[in-house]
Figure 1 (tube, rainbow, N blue to C red):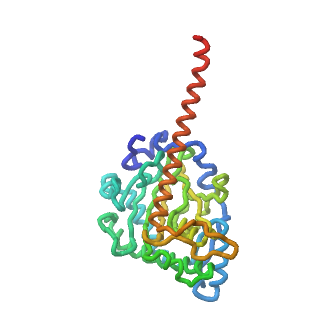
Figure 2: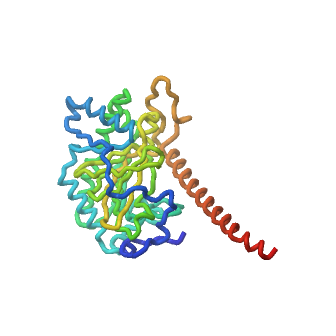
Figure 3: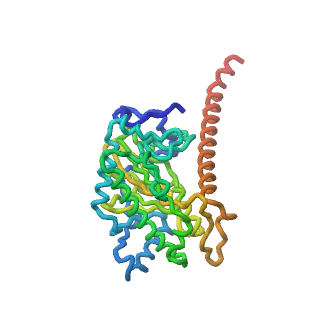
Length: 361
């Protein structure tokens, strides 16, 4: 694959999509970015520390068993902080190309700016720019990889990261109780919780029907908190990709996705959200994803196995090993699909040559 662009700025106004972003037909969007569904529940967290806790827990559990995805409002993250974080994020992607590329994370750097994804070996690029940084554990922060523009970014994102860590632990506490465990069980299973913030910018796309802003996947970690603007583009499936819904944006809400780690700890009771992001030609879109992951050495194995069930994992493994296996499998599936496609093309070319052979026989 030819090297991708350093930013999407120069491509957003082009009449056609660069080939490196074009996906196979079976991977292309099935429904539009603004064809909204309200099946993903919106849950108010008001009273979660009091008399409404059991009611809220029931709603969250139902959502996790059904979709692995829900939205929360009245979550305690101040509206002013959310607005300031969003303003700074938009400001970063509005910087000149050379300013963004000061934080280029290609070549294995841990945090910074890049187009599509930092994962190696991907056959097709996602139509997005990202800036990402690791915020927890605090001792591991590398501020040289955090943007210093727009002014105020570091101070605001430090506060934002702290608030999101608190919200994540609150939600994990509810899920722990639902599993019949102590409130801190899921948080403790993470050992020393890791937090990564990924700010996604999806520019207007010349041919959005041919590509994705973010390919279909499940998150590897425990839980993800996503702040999205009102444009729309987050999509989810629960039938293996046969049908999709576009999640209705709710002002000030966080979309909560359960990840693979949370799925395994619950012994498969709670679903890992199967999702993707689509783009459009009318509006750019911004989202801020906060990934709450276990430490690399944390053990991945069900914490609660209900009567009559068997463990969904053969043996305990570390999160680092779980992540390695997931990435290896994803890249291998992509490689096999590419080979199958190339074989199909070869067979088609052979078929076209058959009449020629008959003529000269």
